[in-house]
Every structure is written in structure tokens, then in C-alpha cells.
Length: 290
Image (tube, rainbow, N blue to C red; front, side, top):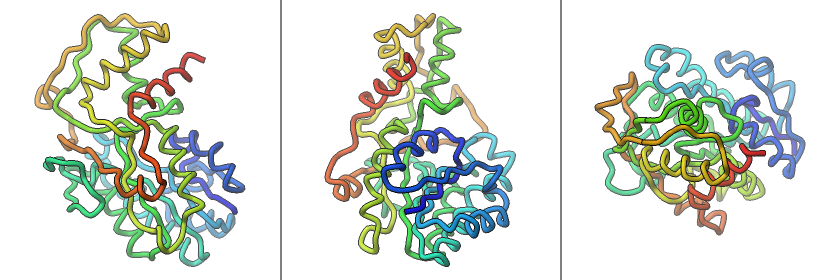
């Protein structure tokens, strides 16, 4: 099987690339060869590579910046996935695409199922939802995986890396405590992705939710990061983590207050539940020490 991995330099793709090797030949491409903001670049790369499977790990992920760059966010997140899906249909190839909890508005009282109504609050969420819709319109040979609060060793600006950096520099850090979700390590997300590949087919195509299990606030997550980092002997200066409200930390983009995703459907497909988020955090931090 020939696998085209788009977004090859991103934090998820860096984790996916070695894991996908067990499924076939992996051709990882970054924007120099496949620029998701340029439709012709996508079509050309697809025609040259002729993959059996496309794994799209590329996205415009700057949630706040998207408010001032809506056209670029929509080109990468909204239009490009549809073009990838169209080209897959032509080749008889399958597409695996990653979407986000931000397609929901966060007003739900329980974990979001795949069938729940979407209502994104900001430009980023709207662009990601447009991408999902474009894929579905192009055909059925796809799996869309919505995930949330993603972090990995390859990332620069993810929450864990940011907390580790601030924890070295500051004695006091203020963190939002009224947004609730499930932190997801790229290692676990990538492992689940590779487990889905042998199952690809008409019975399994569709939309799934995958996050690590367990629920917390950003504040809870920050506390856990510093507790686990301290155990590993990572350098920390931080003494106090202060819980604050979303209103006390205004951002250009509105974020869902509750974005827990139900993993019932994907657990049934894989025959196993996602590992707890704290377990994923430990594994990620252990790699940081090496």
C-alpha cells in the first residue's frame, strides 16, 4: 500500500510517519511538495504519487490567528480536504482526515457523539467543518477523525510545551479553569489511526471521535503537567498555578466551554478504549527527558 502523508512537518505527522510504516510505503510531504492552500499543488502531488491511501495530518491550526486570516484558514481547512477527497475518488483511494472538537459550540451537557449537531463558534471551527462537509460531498471513501486538545513531542506551540517553557521561566502561572475537554497525545492518536487502516472499507467509512479518555480543565491539565514533570526531574521554577475564568483571559477566537467527545463508536471499531489522558502525558514527558 502506498500512503501519502500530508502535513509532513507537523506534530501529528511526525508521530504518524514511523507508525504508518507498518501499513505500507509512506510518502510524507510538507508544503514544499503539497501546499494545502494551493488546489493545483494538491492535484499535482496526487497525480504524481498515485496513493492508495491519503492521511491528511495537515491543517491551519492557529485558532486565534484564523480570525484575522479567514481566507487562508478556509483554503487549508475548508477547501483542500474536499480536493483531496475528489482526487481519492478518481484513484479509488481512501482518505483519512483529522477534524476537531471546535465544530461544536460547547453548550452540550454530555460527551458529543458523531451525530450531534455542529455549531462552530469561530473561524477555525467553521473552516474545519467546511472541510468535513467537502469530504462528504466528494464521496464515501473516507474516515474523518475528530479529536481535541492535541499535543505531541514534535509540536512547538502545544499546551504541554508551552506550560513546560513557562514553568521554567515563571513562579506563577494563570490558567483557564472553566473550559473542559480531553487532552490527546499524538502517540495514542497515531496508534489508533494505524489500527484503523486494516479495517478501511464500506462498512467502516464515516466519522469518528478519538481523544484520550478522562476529562479535565486546562487548569487541571497544567497541574498534572507540573506534577509529572517534577517526578521526572524536568527544570521548573513555578510555585503557584492560579485558576482563572475564560472571561479573565480574552482571546480573539471564542472557544467551546465543554468539548468532551464520546469515544464509544471508535472503541467499538477497535475493540479497545483509548488510554487515559494522564497516561499519555506521562509517556510524552518521559520522551522529553531522553
